[in-house]
Image 1 (spheres, rainbow, N blue to C red):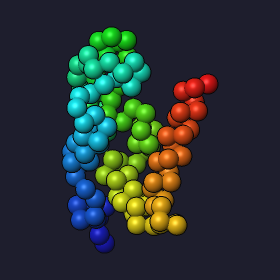
Image 2: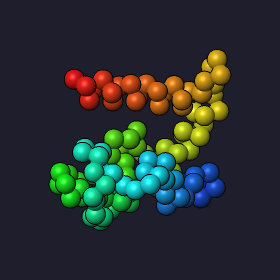
Image 3: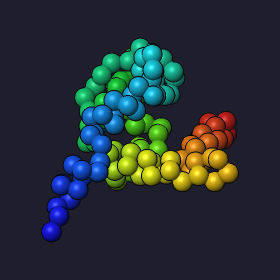
Length: 116
C-alpha cells in the first residue's frame, strides 16, 4: 500500500515554495496590512500552516500570508490547495479557465462585502 506521505512527495509542491510564491504574488514590493494598507508591519511568528504572521504597527491588527485569500479558512494543506488550483487551470470554458472564473468571482464578492 502506498502511504499518503509518499504520494505527497511525488505530486504536491513544497510548502515553503508555495508560501513564497504566494507572498511574491500578493506583495511584490513589500508586505502591507490588508486592513489599513500600511506597510509599517513586523513579523510576529507563524501560523499552524507555517504562514508568516504579521502585526501592523499603524492599526495593530494581526494578519498572515493567507489572510483574505482563498487559502485562509481551508482545512487542506497549502500544497494540496496549489495542486487543486493547478488542476483547475487546465479546465477552460470559452477560453477562460475555471480558476480565472473563481478568482474574478472571489474578487467581486470581496468588493461587494467591503462596500456594504
